[in-house]
Image 1: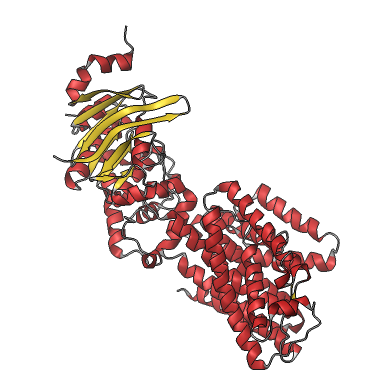
Image 2: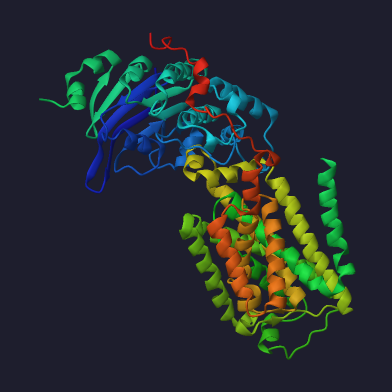
Length: 247
Length: 358
């Protein structure tokens, strides 16, 4: 299995704070990869580095065999590497269907298509995906009026609308009603198996990540602490110490 | 389209058409009203629909005015020599020369304003929020001062525009219909524009630019095009207004930052920014109040306008249409979830506990 994303020796500091030190990891094509670590261990910083939010201090990031270390956020997104946010980022003054439509893939866009209307197929796809995440009945509501959990689901649907190759999910279950989490895990798995989207997931909820991921990386204090199959990472003494504190 | 909507559009068009014939004394005032509507509409493309509050849009108005002046005069005379004489030279334009000149001038003004927008856009679109507002304001003020110091275009002394060949009544009607046509064309264009994916994309930039970037939207391209559209129509109306007034001067006529430049923001805010009709409504109300106070409360007119802006900004920032949309959302096509228990629980039926956790 080839690697979709290769992160090689990436370091990033903010002033004197080292957020990532010489981090290397690989996201295999078609799989679900997990990233865990205690608060402040540099998980989100690593995501930001991968999608180009800020320049990295050292190291390189390769996506589909192409060096993307210095690309802009938009360019990376158009290549098919998409991320969702820990806090919801949706378009609050637009309704759900509009949120979905504006999320169509922009890689094929030219000056002419800027001024076209959306074809009926886009609306159909938007409805399908809203149905998929369970928001169909809310589709005409302003996205800003939805609850936090619903906004997260909408953001997930918007990401699917964009037809990415790989989706970086930053804590997809944070703030979601516990009874809904199982449904969400199911949907993430279906997005992976049915739509063929590779997933790379940051998650705090151990039960979720152990169920979901095939391979897990664990960061602590900005450095790669452990990696392996879920049960290996779960039983790794270093990981347990990092989470609970070593004695 | 519903009958009432057709009647509304038809009524406005008809009123605009016959207004100068029924009230000939107010031709200039109503022409300025159409210009104000155009101002508010073009400001709202960026300020309302895209969330970029520009205080420097007046720049394109002045740029269009100066470009048309130079183009029109240079058709028959050397511009430098003409301005150096401070009006001592009277150029005779034949009818054909005048009308070719004015339409060429308007075309050049529109294109020139777009070029200005693209160049300035490269510089200012790195800025966001209040920094963008101050940055654009600074550029507009600086441009006015630069033009005032440029002798080729007459410096602070300005340029006299070519004289309209014909009767003064015909002249005022001619410019009235130019302003009317420009405003109607702007409205029709924006009505179409906001119905395309362009409209949705600039709304997305307004609501969350970081998200739009993360989703791969060509944000810079949309911002540049949106600003160019505003500049295009402002350039046209600048060229028309310059000819209508007959004299172009940098600080009061071409780059009136503290009057027209602020009015366009105030009008769009008053009517309701981010809507198509809000700027139109705001412009009509604002212009009415302005003219009435100018006529009957002379000396208090700035107080009255200031009070409108203060009340608007402090008590109803969403503007008249925004306030109406909150009060009667259904009439605006908005759907509000009135169910009291509208929370996370709604989709619970679809979650299958235990299935994925096995």
